[in-house]
Length: 428
Image (cartoon, rainbow, N blue to C red; front, top):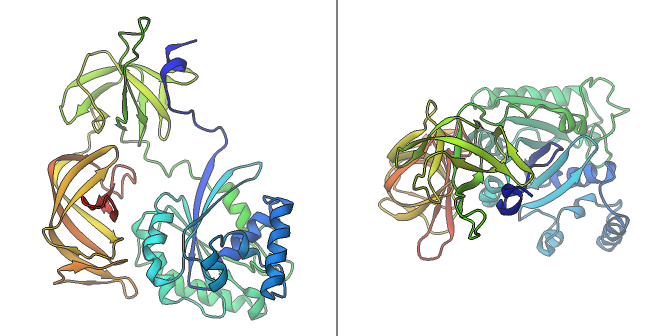
């Protein structure tokens, strides 16, 4: 057995590709029903689950099996008929594995959507065909843009209630395209569906012959996500230093963690931040043996040719592709706490595996997400509000802009007294 197999605690990565996606939309647009339809039509639920949903639907007096109950797990959600928390669901097809984040539609749960969408490859934004594009649609599109979600699917739902008319779909497509032009959304696609009836969700609709595009499931299974990760800037935040306490491996010193971005190869010249010391990669170890090359998002252990002092929170980078290093950091922040963000407030800032103290120095503006206008001359941010701030940290951070690197460009702010997460930030 190799040393990597004996001491490396990090798991290998799955062979089958994983797609993370989130759902969003206004209240009662059918987000939970759509996910229930995906699970049901892709045969990803058990018979006893389906029986429980049928019984619950009968008790509620629903005319049909309410597939939304497959995801609305909280009792409060079922009683009110809305989604409050972020409901995560897992399912798989022969082509891919999926993690779904079903996020709330109410404006007061904006923070829940930010949480659910923060790691997504794709966002599904539902629009009620009868209502068209609403303020909540704009809000969710802005958040998807802010979080740099690479792919956005606009699903025009409840087409069965507008007689499957093509002109209704085209009007909504035109309205949203005008909004998307103002936002930084990389890839937008439109699909007319009926989550209740199943049209264009997993199976093609027989009553919308005018739509020649793919079904939603086809897009989920086949959309290319290989380029979503930053494979240019090599970043390795150190999570744990491995020093075996055995006679056989007493000279071994490895640095375990998950590659945030880029590629590392045996023999690469690297720099350790914040010390600035240079070294060379001696080996890349995993559970199943050593590798010549590793890339994001693999979990590995690096060893170096030099005996360098490295600890958790340090970062190993390829010499020619170094990040920004500064104590002054500007970011867009979504405020997650009922206690407002104010100037000169002190927080703990968590960035990759690094924790530092910070002070809020400036509050530049907050966004009116419904009109996409900036509101200046503000001195606080309330729960669910989004704004631009500048913080100063007690020691330098090494980071990239969120636009270029979602991992090393994201931070959270933590309240020191309670240890509550109060803000989610995207570095500019």
